[in-house]
Image 1 (cartoon, one colour):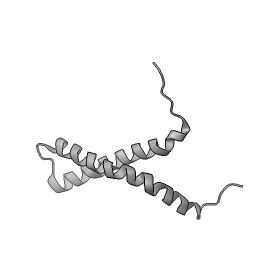
Image 2: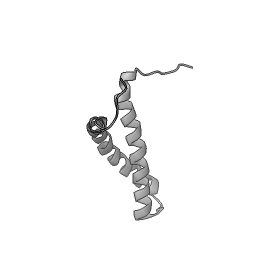
Image 3: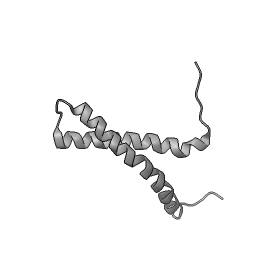
Image 4: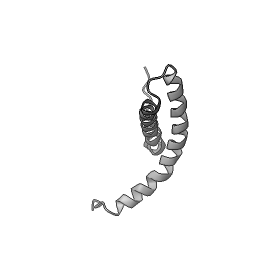
Length: 80
């Protein structure tokens, strides 16, 4: 069994990819249940909504994350 290891530089896109997938999936599922309930074709509708949400969420987090990080660094004491 081979162990796949990524170079640390790939964390800049892997972490947002996974986080945006989890968050967009959870939020789209929650909103589908609130708005439609558990209808007979829920899984199909949810997967379609999730895919559209993820297409927006991933590029958005890639753009916004560095901006938020830079903003927050103004309020964080750096080690000396």
